[in-house]
Image 1 (cartoon, rainbow, N blue to C red):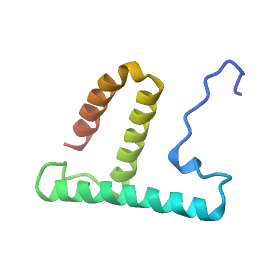
Image 2: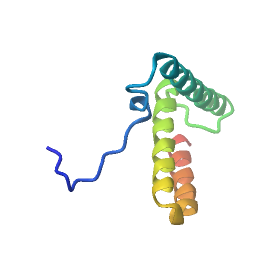
Image 3: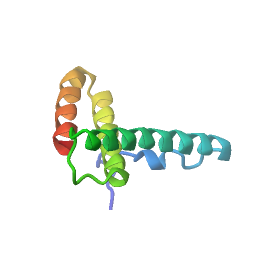
Length: 99
């Protein structure tokens, strides 16, 4: 059970469209698909040239990478005085997972 003193949990990007008008929801879905498609393409290209791990599964790792990036963005937004350090650490962490 959630107590009133508990922090509000982060909202996944997939939940942000709840309650939106159908046309707005469709636009948001299209945007999310495009972003994940671009990340998947980057992962595939990186694998092809040997920059990224050969055992990546681009369809899955694109979603995981997007989630990591969303978390980094949210943390930086919530603690702007630490945004540069968060971006640096987040970049290091994401790249370590992919290489």
